[in-house]
Length: 358
Image 1 (cartoon, rainbow, N blue to C red):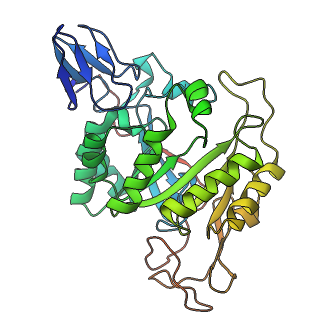
Image 2 (image 1 turned 60 degrees about the horizontal axis):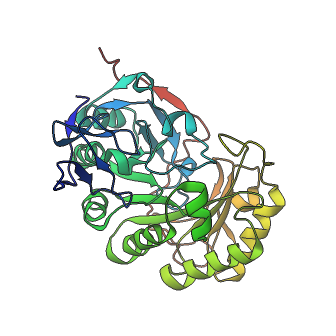
């Protein structure tokens, strides 16, 4: 299952092949892998080398993705593979996303097995996460089809760095997405991620305006790099104007890692300030992450300002929405995807094994 025929490529006049999945446009000689390390030229054909293999399966709270408005309190069956099409110097999952060791892919499962495992564990959704699902799009899309056949929702946790044609195909299979908007600066994207800002903004616009995918955004605030009041203001203004005030925005704390281990962790005050700025720019749902902040974890009704989902980390302390997502205090609609609340999965993290590869 490990060398699977891939989509989104074409042959060049010099017999190399070009990957058309993301804006890197990798041009590959025979045997060569792309920057993501998992898409390879094999005898003049593009193959995906990680189809059917995972760096691990785990059941998480949906709020960990983070998705605070997508069936709150539900559990999500999470998995990823290895590799990434960005080169973030601050990667918080670098042991997986930067891996060049396919032996890390210790779990094997086809799409149907994943869907069946998620159903057996009572998960509302399956998330493609840990590394970016863009690079294993074919595997993720096939798994999404298997999930939908069993009534299970699908979630992409992604940097959103993707060309238009595969983006259309990929998100036609997704029910929700959390997109990392890593900065609102092209200079930051170029020097710290090896990518560009505009394709990510294009993905955000596409998701919100041209699909039915539920969208939330996360920005990791890095001290001295993308945490200035001016940049946070510009980012929030863009979200409010281009996407609208009801798209949830999460500001998450950085911890020193990978190639930026000489920087300090993000102070909680920086996250609180960013949240205040974004709310002042008109965004209705702004959260803080990777820090203990009940105020920043909680969903407030934009109608009456009362707490309708009070959280402490991933624990839900109180829930005051009806099954259609309306505030039980004033009747205002809360943006998102909701169902009858049956309690919260909580902050547990349950590893799952499907099978070991031969």
